[in-house]
Length: 598
Image (cartoon, rainbow, N blue to C red; front, side, top):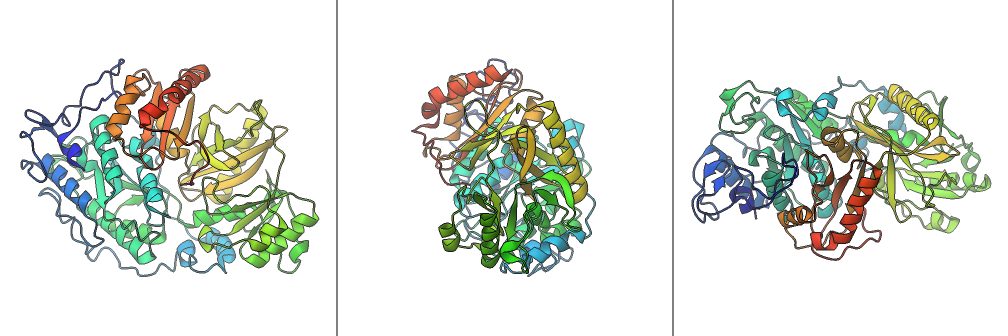
C-alpha cells in the first residue's frame, strides 16, 4: 500500500501550492511512477515493485517506511536504512529507566481504581511542575527557516483509544501542521488507510517520507495496558534519540542525505495527546522537551462542580460559581449548579439534592469527549439504571440551562482555545450535531464586546489559578449575554485546536468553518478525493488563502475539513458548493445522522 509513498502519484498540489489556479502538477521528488519518474528526487527504474528500490539515502528511507508499515507484530520494527541508527533495537540503554508502574502519576495510578480519585484531584494541584515549553512561536511560523533549530514531533496516539477508528483518527489529526522537511509525526503501523493518507500528504503537502515514524500498533488490543503504552513511549523516544536529525541548514533537513554530520542537532519538542509522568521521565532522560500538562490536567476537569458532601448527602449545597480547587473559596466565574460524582452513592445523593431544588438534570461523563455520554434529561429511572464506567472518570450532574439562542433556534456556544497560559486566537462557535454531539467550530463567533471581555477575564483567572502549560479550552453558554462556564477541556488538545492553528498559520484573520464527516464512504483513494476537490474548484490554496482544506480523511471512518473564505458570505458559498458535490467527491452517500463519537 505504501508504493504510492515511494513511486508517487499524479495528485495535484494546489493545497499549499503557489499556483493561483490550482492546476494539477505533481511535486518534484514525489513524481509519477514509471520510467523516468522521480523517487524522492532520485531517478526511479521503470515499474519498480515491492522492495526493488534503488539504493540511496532517500529511497532507503522510503523502502524502510513501506516495510515498517506492513509489520503487524508488537515486538518488531523493521531494520532502518543505513543513515538511521538502531531504530529496530528496543533496548533503551541506561539513560532510559524501566517503569512497570507509574505510581507518581495520579491519573494512571488510579485508572483501575475509582475510589480515591477525588482526593487525587486536589492533591495534584500541589505537585511541582517542570518548566513549561512554548509552542506559540513555532506554530505561528510558516517558513521553516525561521526556526531552524527546533523539530516538533506530533504524537497523538496514546494506546488508550477505544478502537481502530478512534486510534487512526486521533493519530492523523495534526497531519496538516508539519513543516515540510522539518517536523515529524508518529503514525500507527498496520492501517492501509493511514498509509494512503500519508502517501497523499507527501505528494501534496510537500512532506518527505522520513517525516513519519511508524510504530507497531495493536489495534485489536485497545485500550492498552500501562506497560504496553510505556513500551511505545520508549520506542518513539529511542527513535528520536537515534534518528540523524539536523538543522535546516544541513543538506536534506532532518532526515535527508546530509546525515547527522550535516549540521547541529536541533532541539526536539514532543507534542503528545496525553503527557503521562512515565513519558516525561523518559524524555527528560533523553534530553527531549515535552509540551503539555501532566496527566493530572485531565483531573482538573473535575473541579467544575463540588462533590456531594458525604455528611449532608442529598442536602448538599448547590453553588453556582466555580470553587477554588484547594481553598474551596468561590471564584467570580458562573457555572451551572451541580456536582461531580465519583461513585454511584454520590450520583444518587447529587441527584436527590438537585431534584429537591427543582432542577432539570443533565449528566456528563467527565473524561469523555465530543459530547459522548451526555443526557440532557437525566430522570430518576435513568439514575437508578445508570451503568458506571470507570474508564470515563467521574460523572458530572448539572442543571439544564435555558440559554441564549441564535436566530435559527440553535444554541450559541462560544468556545475559547488556549496554549499554556494564554488564549490562542479569537472566540469561536462550537457546532453541534443532533442534541449533544460535537461536530466542529466556526469563526468568528458573534458575541457582544462586553461578553467577550467577561470571557477573556474568566480565561485569565483560570490560567492564573491552574497554571496550565499545554492545550486546554473552555466552553460557555450565554444567558442574556452573561457567560456561564459549562466545560473545562483540559489535559489534551481539543478538537478545535488543530484547525485553529492551521487557520492562524495559513489564513490569519479570515473566517472559517471546521466540520467533520463522521462516516466517510469507504473505498476511495485520498488522492482521488483531493483531485475531485480541485476539479470542483474547492481545494484550499495558500496564495488566495481560501477554499476547502482537507485536514485529514479516513475513508470508512471520520474525516475533517476546514472551509476558509474571504468573508462570511464566501464561507457560505464554499459550504454550499461542498454540499452540492460532496457525495461525488467522497465517492458515496453521506450519513448526516449522529454517528459514533470518535
